[in-house]
Structures are given as structure tokens and as C-alpha cells.
Image (cartoon, rainbow, N blue to C red):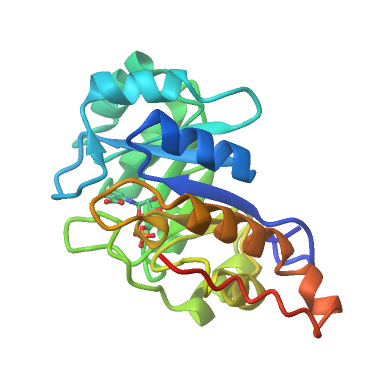
Length: 232
Ligand SMILES: O=C(O)c1ccccc1N[C@@H]1O[C@H](COP(=O)(O)O)[C@@H](O)[C@H]1O
């Protein structure tokens, strides 16, 4: 399975930073396995919504799609309170130290994903249910649009015994190469599938999911002309 270093399989996809029901629908119809709703973050981002709005969006996520709360809590307790209130299927935390992530994991009723950079990932390996390896800003926030060190992330996938999600600077044009290089459990995108002015670009979301989904098939089919390129 991708993400555990044991060879090919289906790569899951997460479309993050959903702010509108229409974009949620696009992601679900495109075949995304997970969607992310961002709230209570200390970074300035157009993808941040109020907790009330996050609760509405998460409630609209259909069965068999993982509605992920993405947040930057200052403590495990704050994250538990928010998750209890918003009732996501999973919670992704940024900027929380490993011992606090471990405390959150004990108390949360849903799986806990820790967003980390490649260098600090090993310190979180026993603390979380999965790691989101991203190119984070100095506060630990994501959505930077910058790629991570794929070679180092590939080593993490091969060496760690938990699912590794690759995030950071992905889009329809590079996700297939990222999947083939890193072999992650899942790929995660926010800014790479957006329209100018905000919201998701439906064609880009569809191309991203399709390209990630087919990336490993294409290993057996090098003549494929599906580059995943799309006009944003
Ligand atoms: O997207 C944001 O603005 C954001 C803010 C604070 C915490 C997390 C955030 N997003 C996460 O970062 C990844 C990668 O973003 P990008 O594709 O490089 O733009 C995104 O998928 C979210 O998990």
C-alpha cells in the first residue's frame, strides 16, 4: 500500500480548504477521499472559516468521505473542545508539540493527523494516527504552496509505521510525479486547485484527483498521454 513502503496501491486524495458547499460537491464528485475545512488558525489565509461555518460544511460531508477539521490549537484540550463541537471524521493539527498531539490522540474520538515538516516527522511517529508532511511556515501553518523535500518524505514513507500524507505545493501538474516519487498513503492539496478570487477550480480539482488516482497505473503504461495539465 502506498504510505507504508510496500509497493503500489491506490493513492488517496484530500482536497483541503473547502469554504463553500459547491466546492465540497465538486471534490466529492471528483472522487476525493477526504476534504479539509480550516478554522481557528493563527495564520492569515483565505481558506479560514468560522467554527460555525466549519460545523455546517463538515455536517454536509457525505458518508464514505472523511471530513477533516484542520486547526492550529494552543493545547490538546482546545483541540478536543473544537472537535467535540464540530464533529469531524478526523482532526488535523498544526503547530502542536508531539506530547500534546499524543494527549489529543488519547482524548479525541476521531483519528488525529499531525501536520509536520519532513525534518520533525520522526518525533511525531508515535503521537499521531497519521502524518501530513508539508512545507510549513514559521508558525506551523500550511497552505504555503511550496513543495516539501520529496526525497526525504519518501524515506519517511519507507521507514515509518504509520500513514504519511504528502502535502505542500501540489497541483494537477505535479501530483502524479509526486506520487511516483514519494509513494505516500495520500496526497493533500489546497492552494493548487483554486481559482483567482477564491474557491476551488472544478476542472483543477477533477484533474488533481484523476491524476493522483492514476499515477501508479501509469507506471505500467508509460505511453499514457494524460499529463494532468489543466488551465487554472
Ligand atoms: O491552507 C491553508 O491556508 C492552511 C492554513 C493553516 C493550516 C493549514 C492549512 N492548509 C494545509 O496545508 C496543506 C498544503 O497547502 P498547499 O496545497 O501547499 O496550499 C493543505 O492541504 C492543508 O492541509
